[in-house]
Image (cartoon, rainbow, N blue to C red; front, side, top):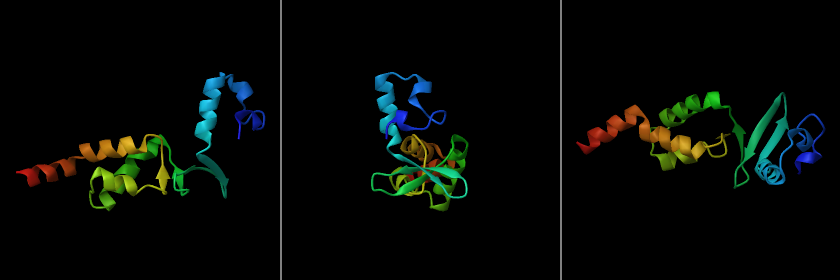
Length: 116
Protein backbone atom coordinates (compact mmCIF):
# COMPACT_ATOMS: atom_id res chain seq x y z
CA UNK A 1 0.00 0.00 0.00
CA UNK A 2 1.25 3.45 -0.83
CA UNK A 3 1.11 6.42 1.53
CA UNK A 4 -1.01 8.46 -0.83
CA UNK A 5 -3.67 5.71 -0.84
CA UNK A 6 -4.66 6.54 2.74
CA UNK A 7 -7.61 8.80 3.49
CA UNK A 8 -6.83 12.51 3.61
CA UNK A 9 -6.09 13.74 7.10
CA UNK A 10 -5.31 10.29 8.47
CA UNK A 11 -1.84 9.65 7.12
CA UNK A 12 -1.43 11.08 3.68
CA UNK A 13 1.83 11.73 1.90
CA UNK A 14 0.47 15.01 0.58
CA UNK A 15 0.28 16.56 4.05
CA UNK A 16 3.68 15.20 5.05
CA UNK A 17 5.56 16.70 2.11
CA UNK A 18 8.10 13.88 1.96
CA UNK A 19 10.59 13.57 -0.82
CA UNK A 20 10.41 10.57 -3.10
CA UNK A 21 13.13 8.52 -1.37
CA UNK A 22 11.83 9.27 2.14
CA UNK A 23 8.30 8.37 1.11
CA UNK A 24 9.53 5.04 -0.27
CA UNK A 25 11.45 4.37 2.96
CA UNK A 26 8.30 4.94 5.01
CA UNK A 27 6.24 2.79 2.64
CA UNK A 28 8.79 -0.03 2.96
CA UNK A 29 8.65 0.15 6.77
CA UNK A 30 4.84 0.18 6.73
CA UNK A 31 4.72 -3.26 5.10
CA UNK A 32 5.63 -4.87 8.41
CA UNK A 33 2.83 -3.28 10.45
CA UNK A 34 -0.83 -4.20 10.77
CA UNK A 35 -3.54 -2.15 12.52
CA UNK A 36 -6.20 -4.28 14.21
CA UNK A 37 -9.35 -2.71 15.58
CA UNK A 38 -10.95 -5.15 18.04
CA UNK A 39 -12.07 -3.15 21.09
CA UNK A 40 -9.59 -0.34 20.53
CA UNK A 41 -7.11 0.12 17.67
CA UNK A 42 -3.84 -1.74 18.25
CA UNK A 43 -0.69 -1.76 16.13
CA UNK A 44 0.97 -5.11 15.45
CA UNK A 45 4.32 -5.92 13.85
CA UNK A 46 4.52 -8.85 11.44
CA UNK A 47 7.64 -10.92 12.12
CA UNK A 48 9.56 -12.61 9.30
CA UNK A 49 7.94 -15.96 10.16
CA UNK A 50 4.48 -14.33 9.76
CA UNK A 51 3.73 -14.24 13.52
CA UNK A 52 2.33 -10.93 14.72
CA UNK A 53 3.71 -9.18 17.78
CA UNK A 54 1.99 -6.44 19.73
CA UNK A 55 3.80 -3.12 19.37
CA UNK A 56 4.60 -1.41 22.65
CA UNK A 57 5.42 2.18 23.50
CA UNK A 58 8.85 3.41 24.53
CA UNK A 59 7.66 3.93 28.12
CA UNK A 60 6.86 0.21 28.44
CA UNK A 61 10.19 -1.13 27.16
CA UNK A 62 11.98 -1.23 30.53
CA UNK A 63 9.17 -3.08 32.30
CA UNK A 64 8.96 -5.60 29.44
CA UNK A 65 12.74 -6.14 29.56
CA UNK A 66 12.65 -6.68 33.31
CA UNK A 67 9.80 -9.14 32.99
CA UNK A 68 11.39 -11.05 30.12
CA UNK A 69 14.69 -11.44 31.86
CA UNK A 70 13.45 -12.03 35.41
CA UNK A 71 10.60 -14.43 34.62
CA UNK A 72 12.70 -16.53 32.28
CA UNK A 73 15.65 -17.27 34.58
CA UNK A 74 18.27 -14.76 33.43
CA UNK A 75 19.19 -16.42 30.14
CA UNK A 76 21.90 -15.03 27.90
CA UNK A 77 21.07 -12.44 25.25
CA UNK A 78 20.62 -14.99 22.44
CA UNK A 79 17.98 -16.95 24.34
CA UNK A 80 16.30 -13.81 25.70
CA UNK A 81 16.00 -12.46 22.13
CA UNK A 82 13.78 -15.39 21.18
CA UNK A 83 11.32 -14.97 24.05
CA UNK A 84 9.52 -11.80 22.86
CA UNK A 85 9.54 -12.91 19.21
CA UNK A 86 5.92 -13.04 18.10
CA UNK A 87 4.69 -11.52 21.38
CA UNK A 88 5.95 -7.94 21.72
CA UNK A 89 7.81 -5.61 19.38
CA UNK A 90 9.43 -2.21 19.52
CA UNK A 91 12.02 -0.65 17.22
CA UNK A 92 15.57 -1.55 18.28
CA UNK A 93 14.29 -4.60 20.21
CA UNK A 94 17.41 -6.73 19.64
CA UNK A 95 19.75 -3.88 20.58
CA UNK A 96 17.85 -3.11 23.80
CA UNK A 97 17.71 -6.76 24.86
CA UNK A 98 21.45 -7.30 24.28
CA UNK A 99 22.28 -4.12 26.16
CA UNK A 100 19.90 -4.97 29.02
CA UNK A 101 21.31 -8.47 29.50
CA UNK A 102 24.92 -7.27 29.38
CA UNK A 103 24.32 -4.51 31.92
CA UNK A 104 21.76 -6.08 34.30
CA UNK A 105 23.30 -6.02 37.78
CA UNK A 106 22.12 -9.46 39.12
CA UNK A 107 23.51 -11.15 36.00
CA UNK A 108 26.82 -9.32 36.28
CA UNK A 109 27.17 -10.50 39.87
CA UNK A 110 26.39 -14.09 38.85
CA UNK A 111 29.08 -13.96 36.14
CA UNK A 112 31.63 -12.52 38.57
CA UNK A 113 30.91 -15.29 41.10
CA UNK A 114 31.21 -17.99 38.41
CA UNK A 115 34.52 -16.59 37.19
CA UNK A 116 36.00 -16.30 40.68
